[in-house]
Amino acid sequence: MAPKFGTSGLRGLVSELTPDLVGAYVRAFLAACPAGPRVLVGRDLRASSPRIAEDVIAAIRAAGGEAVECGALPTPALALAAMGQGAAAIMVTGSHIPADRNGLKFYLPSGEISKADEAAIGAALNRPGSVSATEQGAGQGRRTAAPEAGAAYVARYVQAFGGRALAGLRVGVYQHSSVARETMVGILGALGAEPVPLAASDSFVPVDTEAVDAGTRTMLAEWCAGQGLDALVSTDGDADRPMLTDAAGRIVPGDILGALTARALGAKAVCTPVSSNSLVTRLPEFETVRLTRIGSPFVIAAMEEILAADPGARVVGFEANGGFLLGFAARGPAGPLAPLMTRDAMLPLVAVLTAARAASGAAGDAAGGVAGLVAALPARHTAADRLQQVAPEASAALLARLDGSAEARAAFFAPLGREAGCDRTDGLRVSFERGEILHLRPSGNAPEFRVYAEADSPERAAAVLKLGLGRVAAALAERGVQE
Image 1 (cartoon, rainbow, N blue to C red):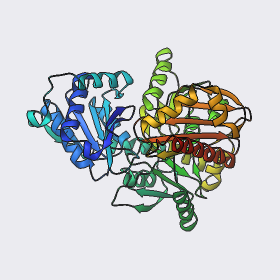
Image 2 (image 1 turned 135 degrees about the vertical axis):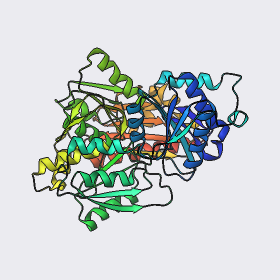
Image 3 (image 1 turned 135 degrees about the horizontal axis):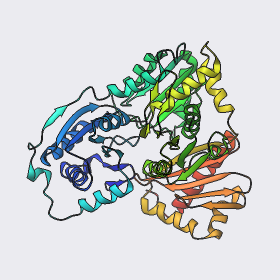
Image 4 (image 1 turned 90 degrees about the vertical axis):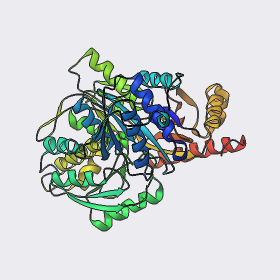
């Protein structure tokens, strides 16, 4: 699959992310968007990221800009630092995808780039007459360093939640190759918890918090039992997607984590993709719920619409993977918490653990707290997974066939009963008369086919997911199109 530019930025095989290709995208970003003269550059812990970061820095300097090297740090920390300085930013990361791939995420001084910005970058990329990075060379612009760029991100949570917010809790930190593995330990410790670092890896581990495999789930549960943990936390590779478990090692789904975080912060308006658990529409605390296409630009656009109509709106956004966006000036137990409208993993982890501890009393029994917070929500459960190495054209053909024919859908979804509704906001989300939901959606930036399921019990959601994955795999195999 050739490098692709879209909602998650640029992604592709490392072998195809050449200096010229990276330079071309950087120059297009600087030419097409109001980035300004200063660009912060960060990276994750993939083996390929240092080289690609150097290519980014060279391209910024070649364009006459100042490239500020920030080293390895979480994506939301880079975004916070850049916005605080009125600067643009580029993050070198492939997020959760395998180590043989990587990518770039672009930020303006105002925050994440929009869909309009994406279109402008694409147009600039294809404009004739540009000079390659190799031909132009580097050296016109300055190169500076800001190794302390992540400090404001840590201070943000310490100042808002305080040194006793998590006192008495023993929290495991599944470190793997998350760029936030030390940041998580530092923040949890500063908030009074006892962090227990686990399984740091020297090689990249592609952790997808939306699709955690059975082996990893077993490992998390064993850690919780063996280490006497009250909870366990982690993130994906660049730390914009959180993962939280209760004391038994059961993962709290990202959209549940988002709803709990929104409620803990006192949000009144929520923007979230259509793939998120529908229970968010049933919570009385939320006066407005906007369902969007999948991807943070769509969530941000919905948040901005609400804020344009009411600048004082207490609006938040979150994705089904748990990445959380804060759109208003909130307040933690110890102090103010400024808006940060980019996907963040740390806020939902800290906010929900704090709420869990408060619900459990001063003794700090977070086991009951996390499980209790989840149990008190409406009984709707989701499950998600993906088929990998599926050619995009194969995914598109299957979806088009189902989308265009009610008869084809009836045959494909027959085991789930009669169709009650079909939502085409993003992919194909089919509701059934028994209250179950199956959502089919090809990935926009990887050779993957994602399947989301929803039902009234976790067991039934898992069964619906298994059925959906099986039907998709069989349909692709029948047509001889799965790679």
